[in-house]
Image (cartoon, rainbow, N blue to C red; front, side, top):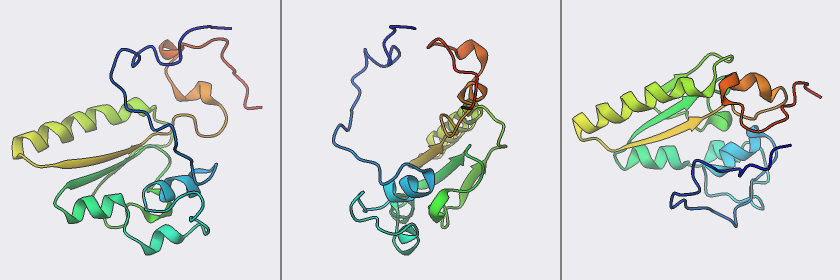
Length: 151
C-alpha cells in the first residue's frame, strides 16, 4: 500500500479549503442541485427543491457572466441546474475527465479576447460509482494497489 501524500500536486499551493462543509446527500441527484443553491444539508428536504429557486448558475448569468456547464457525468446537470444556461457541452459517457480541459482552455481564451467574465461548472465523472479503474488513463495510476473489481 502506498504511503504517498494525497495531494502532491497542490500541497505547495495556497489552497482554500472549506473544512466545515457538508454534502446534502450521498448521491449526485441530491448533492449537486443542493450545493448550487442556498440550501444546506438540513434544509434540502426534498429532491426537487432546486427546481423552484435560482441557483448559482442562474445568478451568475443574471449579473452578466457567460455561464458554461461542462458535463462529463452522463448528461445534463442533475436537478435542472443548467435549465437556463445557454452554453452547455455534454460529453460521451465513456470519456475520461481530461476531455473537458481543451474546451475549458478555449472558453477562457475566447473570453479573454472578448473581455468577458465567465463562470464554468465542470461536472466530472471521476469517482462516481464502481469501476474507478476504468475512469482514468493507466499512466495516471498513482495510488496502489488499484482495485480492479466493481465489488
